[in-house]
Length: 120
Image 1: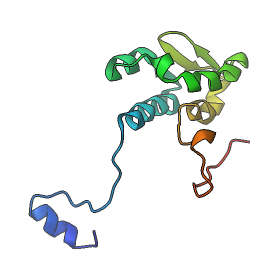
Image 2: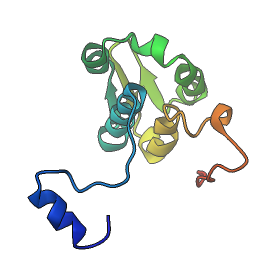
Image 3: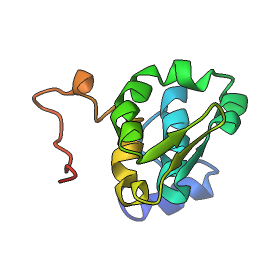
Image 4: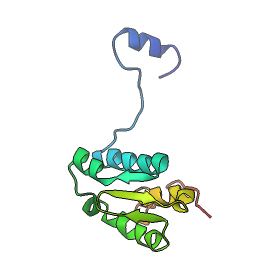
């Protein structure tokens, strides 16, 4: 919505948005999981399960497979209730969190999709 028109719309009691995205529940779940890992270095599995009424490790079965090598390298510790980045893993939070990002996966890659930076 160009410049001053937003003020007029607010004055009419409407929200001054002319473009946006609608997030699916999956987007919200993944945003919370990724946010917890990036901000805290820990994912509270129990909290996610209760809040969204899901079985975390079933819902994130693909992520679980991607986490196996990170677990073998002792970058993450997994249990039923938490996923914790180890002290060394904290240097690679972006890699750990990326396991939960459906838009980074090869199954969603398209020739016209944007390229994201990679961790070296």
